[in-house]
Length: 161
Image (cartoon, rainbow, N blue to C red; front, side, top):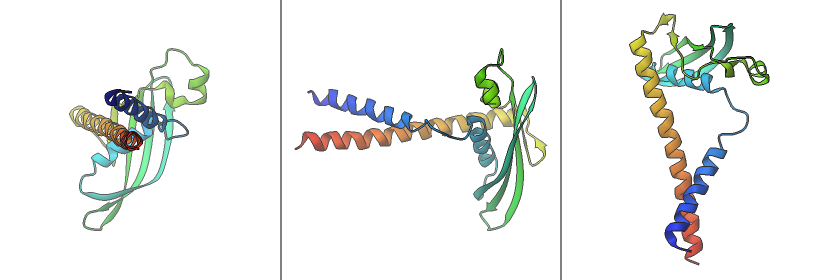
């Protein structure tokens, strides 16, 4: 088999392994996205600890993902905060999926957000959403790259024997 063909097969296998790692029980993408936005809007924080959260619904208009967190600043100070992301209702009809998982009936990007009681401006939210989408996209690309590299090394090691 040609080395380039083997490399492409290894790359495809690594992509499938990386994407396969995305399945299973996980946090809803809207909650994850809201957490990412919250982290990015707390610059200078050393760490964020998620201490609570709940989803609420105002049918048929929107859903709210509310998060409570503790932030440790780079100077060692600690404070609590709260953020809420608002997701527009997008389902045409209720289905078994949307009844079992009500958040799935809503958009994946928030149309509004509050941070510590302050509503973000449209410009702030658009900039934060774009930055978070780019960060999450790069994390996926990097994960696939690492898997592909590891698999390619295994293939090369197998060829050298």
